[in-house]
Image (tube, rainbow, N blue to C red):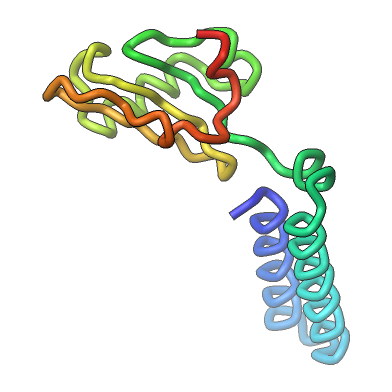
Length: 137
């Protein structure tokens, strides 16, 4: 889910709530507003899928925040993510030592993916395909 999809979902919920809670609000106006948002969101998704430029310009790419147990502070700053937030996510993923962490990726949805392994396995390169800032490590 992109940030635009998230915003569309919030807008749809707001319109539905306004129509249901406000007796002065017309169901027809609410339906037109919902149809407009759904059509615009569909057009936006299609345009992003068909155009590489629009995809590059309008969507976020995943960002590497941690690699091989090393926190990438420059990338944290670029994403406006605090070290405390990163460490909280590591705790949530049951990481007990930074050496267990193969990579942490801030996904395009805003979620953090923690790739960890205590068995000494290496991270497959394809798992970081499309992730920004790999070359700076």
